[in-house]
Length: 453
Ligand code: ADP
Image 1 (cartoon, rainbow, N blue to C red):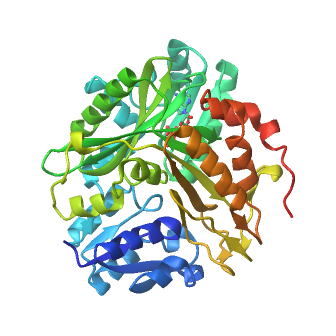
Image 2 (cartoon, rainbow, N blue to C red):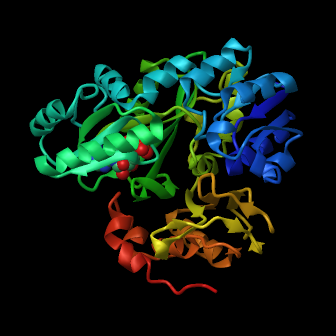
């Protein structure tokens, strides 16, 4: 087992990884940007090294400085968390070339799955259903229009390098398509430095269902069930739950497809295979080759520490359980708490935390990095914590989440706490009759809460 790990991330996921390292008796090295010196991950790690200025590309994306920090501190492995360099094939290879273990899949698997249009082609070859769309990427607008007409509208224009819901535009007809194509392309170039685009049929009101996978280098490919991440705003997840409410036979078919997807790229480590579900049909949309934000809900229902498994796999260990050992227990929900104001078009609201009260108790978990007087920085993602609950069943989990959100106090900045609470009280959410259009359809009623002063 490794003796020292460098965590190439910040915020709650860095804290989350450091905690597991502590349980495992592994020393930790935090990296931080100039504005993050007082961040919780820096305070919890055994050592810390500043890797650059506030802007991500000067610090958390600065490969050279991060590798230098790992070598200087004697860390044998780097955990990339999510975002930043976690799905960067070049970085994964650089680690290996410098004799450092990358806690994630190898660069080959990352590059195969990281490019979403290439990943689609690999899935087609493996006979896994994908959303009808272009074969590979599209060359130019003329070709794109031709293919769009063949597939039939509505069409979703997507960036091959896309992520976080960016570089994606919908078009309902040819004239809309032209503008949407150019806008999506520009957005992709700005966000990812790559404007390669591909097309998918726009599936009306699907559910987003994803499978958590764990694969070791001995060919064991296991799934830890699925999560429903259909509660989204602008294609970004807001609330997730596990298990989903899909039928058993569909779950079995999707799990088999997810296993096949991993095997098709010889995947090793933790990953997530994402699907859209419409009626009894399911379609692969992408694979995330890293730990995901919503991994805790899977941990809650299976009692497995996914970060611990990731570290063990990277250290060359064999998975210590098989598929039959993975037993579902109850239901779990996660709410993403963001520093933003929903009533002001979800404007990000960085600033100083004054007072916080974090609920606790049986089956309640709050993964975060905030503390009183901590200043939320404007440079990074607005997620400040994840409220996670576990209940005996879905009804209990919903009630527990409501009680937890009622008790939670975060003062000094605006958050989406009340907005989340409104979702938890919506009759369709409670019944489970929702899909990815839920938030958009209900936005007016979800914003009808009293401002808390
Ligand atoms: P990203 O990597 O940017 O998160 P994804 O491909 O994972 O993008 O898609 C994010 C979300 O966008 C999905 O969960 C879904 O709500 C919506 N979406 C993606 N592809 C389609 C599609 N073909 N039809 C309808 N909705 C889609």
